[in-house]
Image (tube, rainbow, N blue to C red; front, side, top):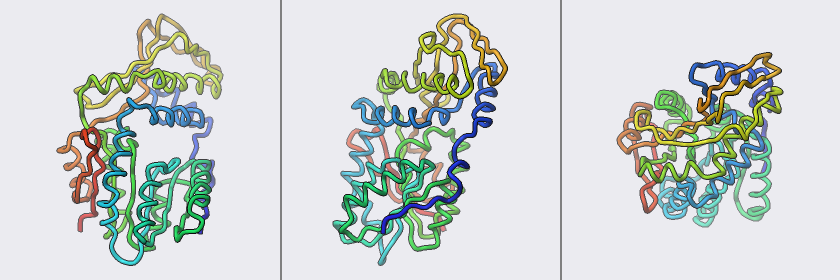
Length: 327
């Protein structure tokens, strides 16, 4: 069984022009200009980010691939009983999860895979790929297009759940936001539910600097200016800006900035507003928080989970932590 289901109208999960305009206006009007990183993830931005994850120097993706390959037996051992749901939040192309799916099928386990993503294209392509690769197996797949929690509400009463939240999505939230998200998750995935969640660990700041200053990161961040120009008739010239990422030991995050290379005034016509930039003034575009194990363990307990096991890559650059809902 291979199918997809829209949880709501797809339009509800993409920024309307008004929402985009309000967010850009608010961010550029701040004394310290800042735009949220989710503005970057339109179709083009997502394609650029996919290329970033394939870079040898982009440590989270390479490290997590290693973890899934090395620890697929440990993950499979979580599964007890006759059947279970494998639920992935923000599945994208499911490239890491397909390693696990293949192993679970080889182990003869009975499960139903539910990839959940707001991108209808990503979910549709993933379901088709799995159908092509596993049409003659017992695999059941239902792709859910929509919000994570709407998707979980659709699935959660249909048996035991193993929820995957891979990659660095949580790492883009500050600790307060992450705790709120995880508290809601602990209340949603069911009393026998497990969560496998990825955290990028704190490491040598020089490694972080190198990873977040690849030319593709600059292209990715500068794409935000393209979006403003295209959607709001903005007057940004990308050649007058440059990007740099740097680790901030106070916030515990790698922060990316676009720097204005000289004094300039940008007219955004659909906002009917002009924004002044001094030379070397910045727009913050990304935050990627790096965690210590102590922070991860405290976050789990405070959010209603208990730690089952930490799964590391060989260099301990990344961890996929297995949590269970606390009774």
